[in-house]
Image (cartoon, rainbow, N blue to C red; front, side, top):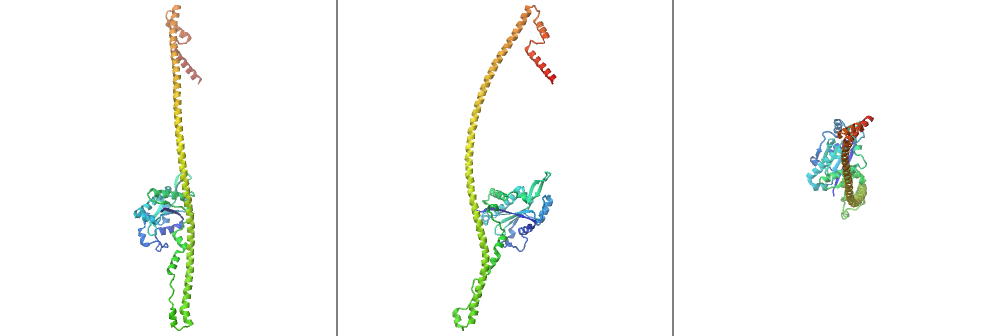
Length: 416
């Protein structure tokens, strides 16, 4: 299975020129022998720099008023390299290869809200062994100054904040290309493999690749022509002729082969060390992959247990909710029933009081008429008027209540 590969290098001002010369193919004599000049015309850009990287950086910083304290050894740019293996690119074809790198470009534009404006260059190289893209950008963060104003600041440290920043990059990049339909496995970052990433040129220096190739090309495996022993019998045998024509050529050849073997042994020894180192890293990688697989299985088991417990809790919650609803409805019904009984009692009592009041009013009227007749008072109206005037009490209960309420309000206003 092929991997979605992304790597990031941090560049100071001293590093930038080398990347610019390599990425834009500015050198006539390439130190990287994997570059095929006859295929360089196939390279293409998603964003092409008009100036050198340093001039583009200074221009961008000035035009955008980017903040940040830049020293001579400060990280001013980052260079991401996107690729996979040759099998992947052979499988998907030319059009999908272009779309793959286009999605890589879009990914960086949106990653951590970087913005396309902060990308200086993005070039795809098709003139080397495996297609890959070099993308150079300025690590700009969106933050606030001491006064709380929004600013844009160059700060690689904050852009890659956190010990797992590259793991986050790998995760985000893998999810992006996966969502775009590319069948790739997640690449393993340095933090997980523990392996040291070597550039191709560094690897060739480490193995002394060019020198070894030259030695293998020029090494002599043939023996020099010497007289046949039968031919020698025909010649007058003498010590000098045998030594010059047979012994010395053989000795010289043996010595030459010995020296070449020593050099070849040294070169191959270096490569043996490299292979042993690679095997060590491969074992570590296999162990990490096994651990990751075990961890993945553990996570799956935990997910199943969580789902099971979650379903149990949901069922318990649903049952409890149903029981509470039944209990609430029962209490509500009982409360309504109790309230209805209380209301009925009050209505009965109210009816009884109304009847008493009505009977009392009738009795008062009859009593007043009886008093007027008993004591020979001309009209019951005059008696009532004199009573209300002298006592300041109204025989009309409603009027008397309204009067008392008004007096209370007046007393309350006076106290305030």
